[in-house]
Image 1 (cartoon, helix red, strand yellow):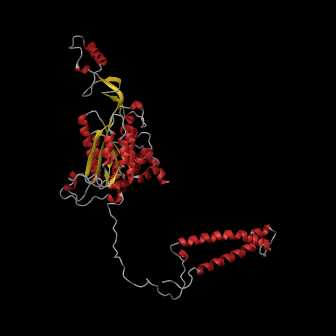
Image 2 (tube, helix red, strand yellow):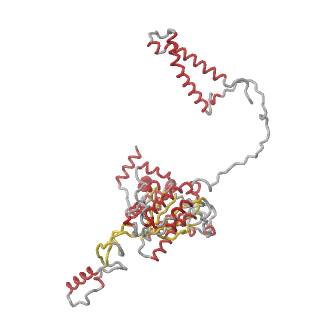
Image 3 (cartoon, rainbow, N blue to C red):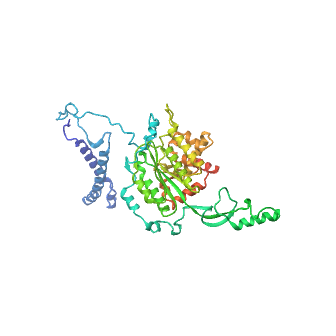
Length: 492
């Protein structure tokens, strides 16, 4: 129904009254009158009135315009939208009569499959062994890398191997990325030592010296010149090649984080391509994980394998760690002296347990516990493990506690453990539901003997691999004074 009369009539009258009242007060009591020698409260002369009007008009125009805009933006109240409806009779217009809707209403339920990762944390009901017997389809979903970008990287040849296009020293070519202070096979000769288990190269001078010293103490008649306890092996100093297993989460919860994944992979390529380091790819989603590329030093093959990856499905994180461990065991059968490094790139929202954790009537699933067991197995097998969290929302802990991500999360867990009377930060993470959902990266890294990183802080480092190796060689633990400082900071 349309109201009778002009709906803006009341508003215009109110504005006019305000303008007339304020203008009259301005003419009689303006500071400009005093400047021209006029007394306040007395009608000034015509030239002074013109000056007052010239000053008053733009000021009042801006104020009224600002007031109208403010009223138009209001959603409720007396002057909402300045659409005053006057009282009186109104006549219906065409379209106001009751009738039937031309299209039936159907409520739209948001899909859990296309939601954020917080909607995917719950494990689907009714999982069985048949679910895990199906190989994940990595060709279904959204592309991980741009195929044209990968084609340009695949075409790099000798110019890349010479170090011309990468930010690496030419002297580091044909070497590894790991700085090994002691190596038994290659590098610069450092010293000699008694062989430990299987030995590779004999250090003749130190072996002869050990034999002569032994014979000088026991006499010249005691057996042959050199015996087994006299043997000494060479110890070298140099760089050892790494075997890097990139464990990449391609589940649907990673859809908004693929840019961070590409940055990490590109940085690792820049620091390893052309060297003796080897890299392999393990991708996981849906029901399990697949080794899409065995460890190799040929990054052309690695990028060809990445072309086939697509984003979809759930997050079997524990299965991915087990698949990475299987790949390392095969590499150790080929070469027992490899230096393995597992780089787990995910948002750490596991919701699929291991198949062996299910029985015939399983109703409670344990993807977090299985993730912990897999990380513990990697540490037992002496595998370096680092966790890269691509969830940018987790950076709030670093900003709040003013520490790197791993140290900030660990400090928060230790403070909560002290509050709850627990002895270990891992227990606090498992006991507090908020921590259990958000601290997956820290949980995996802490149990696996490594550290957790945010992708944003990691890409700002000068060397990504150097940061990984420093994190796995030494562990930083918070001192009691750190806890006291953090508690006082939070209290204030």
